[in-house]
Length: 632
Image (cartoon, rainbow, N blue to C red):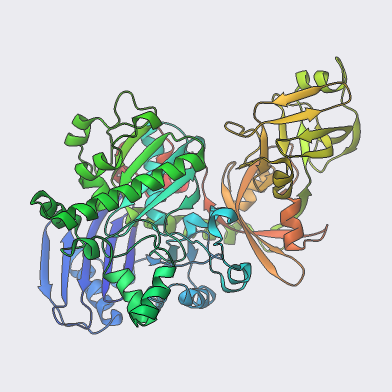
């Protein structure tokens, strides 16, 4: 199977044709300076041979014709045989949390998000419409830069401005470079021979555009880019973090228009603006070596900003298993990597200068460990491959769509919604301590899941700040005690409980349980339960999902429709079909006791795609599409 990936800018069109049976790029190229003097087409074929020639192209529609002609001539694949076309779409807003097959409704939604990405989404949409018109027989899939960051919690994504701007105008942190951050996180998991859901990673995508991402068990929990790609690090021409008062000052004191300020912050700042030389890090480094003080300042600022974000995200994560460098600068500049992690040894980070010096990565050898032997966290350099990640997401969307069209109907796919109040699970030793030795939990009423029941017994929860009284115990007993609370109760107790799957308790906060016969201080075990769906193996086969997959569910509340993402599938022969969300979410969504949902798409297979789950496999280029699509 061949997948064509299209990535359009305001005056350019990049394309990659990938053979998914081998994972290799068959043909790639760029048409630059559309509608301008000096418009040219550069392409590289499967042998690595490149060529550049001048073309006269006025718009993206004509550029697409050149792309399809090149594929037919160079790769010998007629346009009508291109079965899958993936489109990079910069902004998917809050709606799109995974890849989606494009239809008229998707086009309309992408157009609706154009106000959030006025320089990108209109171009993306123009290319989509032209490609669909020229290749009507192909399946067109949208893959969104923002989708991976939809798991960033509200306290990290909402800005400190009047809340109605977030609620009504969707002003919030979205994050970008999602495909790259996700790809290198999966690669790091593969290299470290540990499931992604057991890792805490900080990924640094450093190139002309640059961002850092904190990844907790496969979920993005924060990222340096925000409402637009302007926020965060110092970049090639973007300023990164800046006091908003600078904008009003320049407008007032320098009589600059908003458009002029926007252009300056996006296209005249960063390495270019500071050094006065170039936006290219290599050229800035050469100037610094020759003694240019502004070039040296630009390098120091770039590295300091990355170091600062790494430090912030280490605190946000609690600890970190690995720091991952990627992108043009991250993969190739040993000096930048070294400067970023200088004097971090007391934080448990260290680079081996010898390993750093000889480090080289490419798509055939995608990962290299440059950690010092004393470093408690690994430091990896990973070659990113956003196009391959996007192509695999296209196949994932198509595979799910095909399977569900065959095996399910809307009527069958209705999933009952269960609202999960706060509760406590206890191990045998803690039952003895709280209620007396030999005490047996007393069943008050059965729960929806077979074999589980609410108990007569209750305990008080005592945290650093306050107490929540009368929290019910659920039976039967478990191997390890665990407390599940809501977001509002977090504040009352004074704890910061992470969103976790049941049983995943490492690094969670402490709490004291008070019963009629004694007290138990849990060293860890307090979580906010991740949304999940219980189902039998027969249900899983019907829905075309596997245990551990993460899906999106559409739920209809009072007069409105909501999409819940990041919902984990739990499969067991003793389960009854039901989706569980906590009380706060149910109240916010105004859900009734008889609410139901519809499973609309798979966000991620268990531990990501199968190629990233097995220990140290052959390079991904040797893996086939079918292997990617199936869970391990």
